[in-house]
Length: 77
Figure (tube, rainbow, N blue to C red):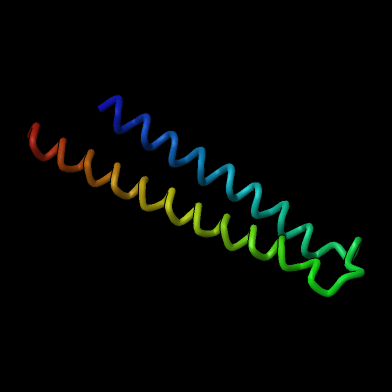
């Protein structure tokens, strides 16, 4: 069960890290500073998309760990 707890902690840390990064990226997009070039939003928007995908992947890992724990409990019971 330690392995499942470790996977869950890693997934939760990934969700937290990417949510914080997503917030910073959103602030960067909302801030009008350094927007002289029309393409200057492209990089933060791509980063935001990557962060959303990373959060989704971490959620799927967490769901898988939850299912594994449920299966383990069912086997023990």
